Length: 503
Image (cartoon, rainbow, N blue to C red; front, side, top):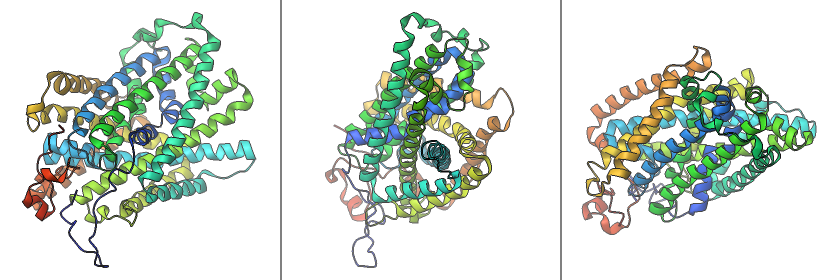
């Protein structure tokens, strides 16, 4: 695959490549990459605890709704991934389904969300790492210095390439999920079926028995699944991408969904209907359960798991955002230097930009408010972006398969499922836009609307100055083979305007 600049010569006289390494990783590591970006263990400690506070004993119902919504959305993304494997992922998909403006705004909002998730993940990881060092080794290290160390480590791993990063993700995610799943199973076994209750599936089991309890909780349920779409960012580097990326995208949602259902059922049945809200008020809810159902001495294990989860999440999040920046730089809607690759064919300039941005945003807040509050602020601000992106990609799937891919249109796959997903995502959107209070944490998501407004202005400027380039967004992706490319495209270093049939 070539970009318009692929024929340029470097100073050394060799062709300057603008391609990532094709076929670098298999489907297992693609799945691990996506699961690490979801960070299920971190979501259990963070977002799902907030969900418990809203939904109470009805938390399993909310998780199941979020599970179904995410699965429908994953199916829409998988349909695109089969035809448009690209590092730009949803940015590329929506460029084809919603046009240049829709695609640009998708990439614009993805950059916003991922740019906040990176310092958020580092802040939370540094807080738990500090606690782990204090409890386990009696060494006091503040969150600030640990923030810098973690950021440098993650940036270094990203520079080494997706092969190294994906191995790190695979090792970390396997360990963290195994430990928490073992704790959940222990709780369910000790509690016994006599304490299981179907009331967890009734909306009236929420604290106030109101639908707003569920819509507010659903915001955090959807956020808990956020990140499954990042597997699509490896569309140019995965082996057999047209099959492995769709399968991994759906597999990520299934794995994390089953894990969440297991854990949230263990929490609700383990605490009981009347004590479930007290769990949400614990400083370390999983540590509390580990101390209660395993042993008080086992609480450090949970701290270690959260640290490992955070490292895996940040590693995956950095790799996701640098590939979106790379794709947008390659198509020159962001500075072209973002598409510059290192000798290891990793987006070196993009890595540097993300590291500087994470340091500038996250370090001051971590010093001022601590890692946990910093995570809550950044994650809350990113929530609206995630919902809007998911809503857009489902609408894009409907339009794309009614126009550009019309010959492949199937009612169930390309209309019913995307439409159902879009309806599901309207509920958390309503919860975000109509919060139960107007506290700072409830207002933070509205910063995304300001960023979206700037995106409309930037899109208007780009469309006016570079109309041809703007209309060509989403045209660079991994073809099935070069025989599908027209001679003029090969000569000019361009991809064909339509993807080849996936066969």
